[in-house]
Length: 582
Image (tube, rainbow, N blue to C red; front, side, top):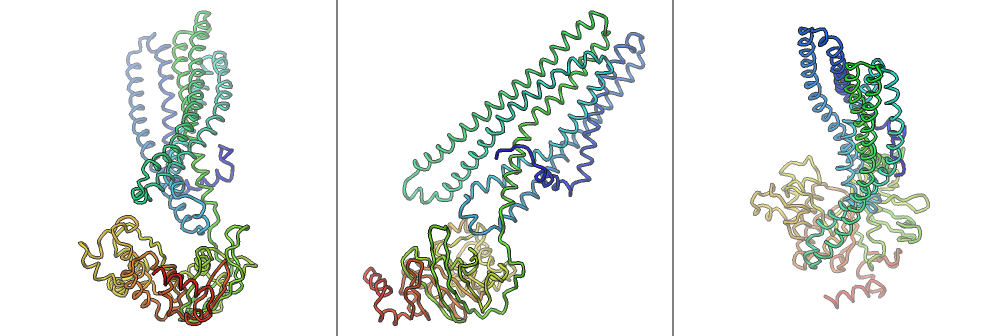
């Protein structure tokens, strides 16, 4: 980020979040305005006291003036409470809305976005960055209004006391502004670096905590500590530069504001000595100068908050501007799915220099099972990702059709509702085992959840748990074995009841005994559905209606198990090699 101020488009976008809170914001700003106006009463009363009430022995007026000031200070107490509480509530609600908007947007971003962005960095934007925006949203309008009004009122009042002395004082303001602008540029760059370093630390923590079991298994504690320490050193260095710039900024600006008092002391003393100002006005002038200096100091201190808030909102806007998955303008719903699938001249590459699939042509009849086998990296999983349009095909990359309809002409939601996916690496959410099964269809009844669990051969195990279906399974299902997690994911698919299945090496990470149980559940799941199966263990797909061998991004062989064995090609080599290993 090279700019630290809000461009007009970003400013308009930021202000739009105030709209739902216009009434409360108006009251908040009115309260802030009254705080500023009431603050001017004290020097006015002071001047009256010193020039009239005390010299003329107007004791009653002295008491009344004191009571008026007290009442106004009580009113300021209540107004400050209102501003502090409700102002922060406005900021929190704006932060909440931004967080909801950002989370909703993240849910709509394509697979490719998450291939290139670390979770920890995303978490930084949705938490600490938006907190800084919240602080700016609350304090920004108040500080600007209170400080602006106080500066104008106090400066105007100083002119009424002695305009020459006021103009002398005011000559320091341009110097203050010049110094502020100079050091603010240094602060901007330094704090941007610090924020990036903080995001890197969060990313490192997220990665290390998620992989803590791997770290312990490989006894690589020192490696992780070293990686974290490297990021932490970068953060400390960035913070050192940021705080050095901030120290220069605040010490220089504070020195200049101190000069205000020196000028008032010397110039005011000379004016008093020359008889150009009386003692009462001089005393009032000193009080009023502090009323002028205070908001100037507030605005100077506000620079850091403004810097952090603007930087945070820019990062929020950058993420919000990431293009989402969009349906075609005339996209239609996929319904009454029979399950016929056709890959026609499909070519695909994640990077222009490396083509993953080359002219793939496959056809699967409704209710049939097609198995994809071949060496790792051949493009099998890519084919599975293309079918639900996780990675979209562009013009010239061929087409994929379901029931004769090009998937690019279908809405993403209707397409994916009709496709169920069982991965090798099962992801379960923190929560209960019942909630994870119900994820397949959130509106399912308890009976439907239990029926799905029975079909997946997991129901009996769930009944042995302390709280049955309400048993918490920990983050990513850490309290369950690999086979149990896989059966939960299968139950999820049973509940979803899609017409098309993708089984992406669903049993390759399991032991032989567990594999047999899972395979039984998968066979039950495949009945009456079109299935695309990626298999590592060839023994599990011998009964497939057709097997396609994918090598180097191309279909090099096709046929049944018997046909491919008889052909004596790549498939037979793979099968013979695996048979010897087993």
